[in-house]
Length: 379
Image (cartoon, helix red, strand yellow):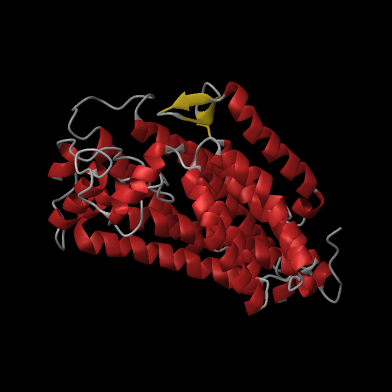
């Protein structure tokens, strides 16, 4: 059979899926260790571990469903997607559930839905369509500003929840996408200057606890029992893990509850304490492998839209994992970002699997004869 006549699923990247499932499995084990290891109670439907397993099963179904759908359909749906996500982010302020002073979640009974997580993927799809349509003109500051304008309303709504971590991910993902589009160094320098100029304004509008996190990052001993407590305990946990770790369900910092927010923001510290340096390096290697497979898909993509979408997905994953691990080891301020595929949370996990489903769709159609010799339309 000619290679062009092979079924589309022949090109499905099972290596990428395997690495993702392995990370998810490690995450479920770490969630169990962080939340239920010492309780001795049997697992039930309310268990964080069981819920994460169910989220993973649903997310896997979403991945295969989106892999079957032609990714180019999102070009024509881009405005529907944009209006829909802005609407969802606005609705959060009306019916959203307030937790720890932040209004980010909509209670869907079965689980808490966080629209800001979905917004990261939706904005990648929308901005990729605009950049693909104007790729040759992205050196023009007008088109650069318009692409940023598409991001501005969602970013503002996410920032006001407040969710500084997701705001950073969305902004950084856009920056990496326009860099991949080939903007000139002068425009790149201009963007850096804009960020520097706006920094004081952003600082002035941060919540007091967010400012305290940044100040504590600069001076870890500023408030060791308050804002700096989690970071201090995370670093102790990572240091005590040594090379091989304390063993599964045997980390003193996590099992004795010294480390807070263990199953979400600081799960990397739990992993480092119990699996050690070797386990942490293995997880980092898995992220690197996943990123390499995504970049391979971006290189193989038949059209610019597919390539930019996968680059955006890779950028989103890179920034999120880098920031989470950075704040766990004390190299970055704490901004409340989950570790991809590992931290507890249904919205994050399903969004990440949905993103991979779209990336698989790009790969499965990279030899589509309908794209041969045909110019692509993005209007």
